[in-house]
Structure formats: C-alpha cells, structure tokens
Amino acid sequence: MLNHIEKIDTVNAGGNCLIDAVYLKSGKVLSISDECAILAPSVKEFDSAWSINESDQCDDDPFTYPTLDLTRHFNFDDLELSEVPKNQRVANFIISAWSEYPDCDLLLLDDGRILCVDSSCVCLYLNYARFSDFNNEDRAIDCIA
Image (cartoon, rainbow, N blue to C red; front, top):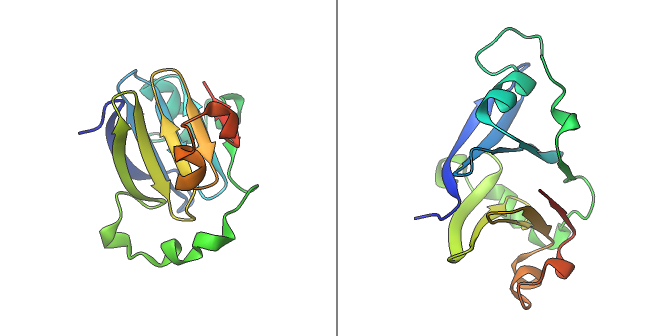
C-alpha cells in the first residue's frame, strides 16, 4: 500500500512515445520518460499537456510544469536494472514502488535512481544509498513541488 501514490500506469503520449503516469492522491500527476519527470497540477492538465485521449495537438506545453531533468546524473553503476523484463516492472520506466516511511513513497527507476514522493514534493536521488543516508533533501539531486 502506497501512501501518496494512487496508481501507476504507462500511457502512449503520441508518436509511440511511452511515458509512465504516476497518479498522486493529491490530484497531481507525475509523468516519467527516459528524459524527464514532469509534475502536472491535475489529471486534466496532464491529459491536455500530453494529448492523452485527445487529438495529436497539445493544448499545453508539459515543460511549463515543474520538471526534473533525468538525462543528467545518470547512474551507470546500476545499468543491469534496465534489463529487468517489462512484465516484471510496475511500469515502463519504473522497476518497483514501495512506501519507505509513512511520509514517503519510493519509485525505483530502471537506471537505479530513486524518486521520493511525499505530500509536498518529488525528489530525485542518485541511488537508494543516497536516499537512505539520513533521508535528507540536501542529498537529493533535485526536487520539484
């Protein structure tokens, strides 16, 4: 049971571009691709920005929302995670999801990095060891709210 995440799904954002959609209990939607993680303020804005269930025309630019650049700080030590078969993953880019503490849900990405989701923000960590080292936001690569 996750504390802040309602559900996780992989959706086609058009042009055969698959993204993972993490629906938060706060109503926000975190979208994860191989390049970035974007935090949309609501399902409506997420759908509009990525043209989900609509025409190929985007009403909003998803990059106007808070964004984490996933192309920087790549974790080359954990590349074997990318070999986990798709049918053993939670979603396309997410290997697993769990609640670490009552105030924090964790997403293990296929390159070994960790996304920590809590009630106020989403933080990117280089790996689980960096996250668990005192669970301190100062150790995060970047955070978005």
